[in-house]
Length: 64
Image (cartoon, rainbow, N blue to C red):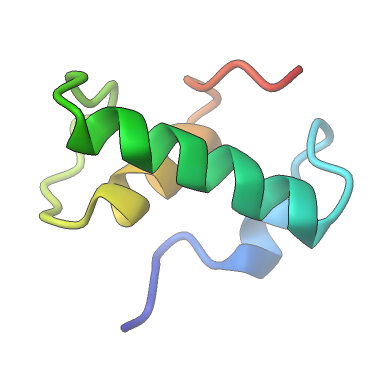
């Protein structure tokens, strides 16, 4: 399965420092979506991980 946007694209964002941080942020948001949170993106995807990645790429997820 290929997630779009790619990990490489997401790592180019200024707020994400490394792959570990990206995985943690994406997994946390994907769990929230699976638990019933409404997606904050208009992307038409079935996978919570892909939805979370799209939200991160669009800057809709707060990264601390």
